[in-house]
Image (cartoon, rainbow, N blue to C red):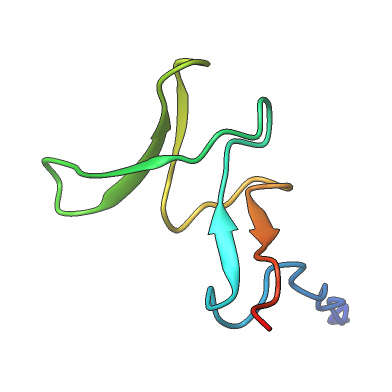
Length: 68
């Protein structure tokens, strides 16, 4: 008997437009780097922590203030 899997909703927005990529620990902007394997990663200098661009941790995107 096959069991149906539940598909979880992705909490990340479809587009990164209108969001700032920040460190989820200290809130500082992250620097984008190219890796040797061809992927990209974000790095926080003050915390010394980072993550790959395709593996966003919760809290890594902060909405930008709306321009008026």
